[in-house]
View 1 (cartoon, rainbow, N blue to C red):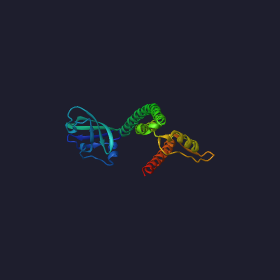
View 2 (tube, one colour):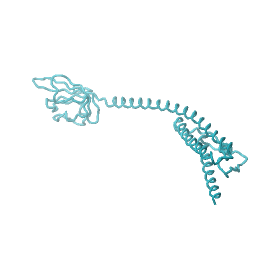
View 3 (cartoon, one colour):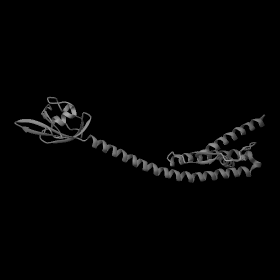
View 4 (cartoon, rainbow, N blue to C red):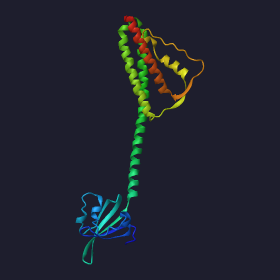
Length: 255
């Protein structure tokens, strides 16, 4: 028993160690003979087990001892009219940690699959919603162009429609970014073409007294970046500039 790979400890009825084997000494780095063994065990599972009260039947439980996780049993025996308790345990620390890691990885995989499904759903909704937004903005711009004679009457309402649509467009951009898992699709972009296309998207009729002039080079200006993100940057700059110019024009007219 002294050379067994299992941890074996023999205690009296009060838990005082009568004898322990070499495997036990390796855990404690010393001989624990004469010490009270039950006090050295913590986190006993299942709860409610009281080692001092073990009487006539073996008891099976898990516990911690010297930062090790043990799968143990405590059995009563009678030896030469002495009532003793035999503690036998196996070190299952590595197994428990591997099982815990496996469970965590399993939960992470399930979460990842859910997020991937949600990302696909978000991407589909964002594309469809984006189409609706562009239709709303297009009709609002057409209405402003068609009713130039009565511009003051409808301008405020149509500008509110456009403003709301632009805000909704930003939400769809965030959804699309989420669908792509926060990753950028880096491609080669010609800044000249990007500026031309962005300028076309803005309706100069919407802002009185403002026009867009471009002084662009004849050759291509190539950069690497995410096209939707770059379009958003350029459009934000142009919209801010047009709003600033519109504000200056209104102040001059008042003066």
